[in-house]
Image 1: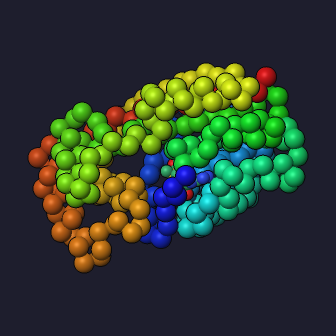
Image 2 (image 1 turned 135 degrees about the vertical axis):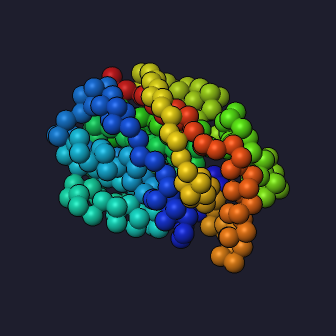
Length: 261
Ligand SMILES: C[S@@+](CC[C@H](N)C(=O)[O-])C[C@H]1O[C@@H](n2cnc3c(N)ncnc32)[C@H](O)[C@@H]1O
């Protein structure tokens, strides 16, 4: 699978401008998998730790695992007060090797937030199943569709501006689309998980700085506007979307559950 580099400045933007998940999500995971302070969690594709830090408050320990050292460095900085988080450099293909470290049936939950589209889920889910204790499971989360894919006027103006800049239409939903969700669910079922799903929805009013930061956090490092070009990029972006302020973003957080019986 082609690897998108969340490196350098992009990791800084990600840490600063990507939302965490609502507390309700973690309450649902606790109920769904019977999580307690006896449990260990794995947050695969943890990035800068948006899920990891909230899991740490509800479990005995959490492993945040990600192949991008710059994302892990930001995650570590943002959670410096937490004593029950371990950060591990690794990708989905490294999960089978965790068996020798952790043993069978050792995890209460594995979360994968906004990251499954980078992974080989057909191979990954069976490998995760052997690591999970009975009653535990996998939670695949998406934290809303990209902010340029909505039908509001400001979102359409942003989409038009960004596709003009990139020279291609913006269509990727990063795992949040129904077709991808159906594919992930079928793959969980093929690996022997009982599946379910849930949604938490809310609206967030954001400002121009947040829009720009979120755009940079979703841009590979080598495609970011060069420092000398950045002010011009931001001015043009502002001119394109400001007539449509306020920027209210609908956030639909989806959870796809795979429970080990
Ligand atoms: C969009 S970020 C998601 C971060 C965080 N989990 C969240 O919910 O906001 C995607 C993360 O997946 C990581 N990633 C990319 N390929 C991966 C792979 N094959 N295995 C595990 N993680 C991967 C990236 O390095 C990046 O940190």
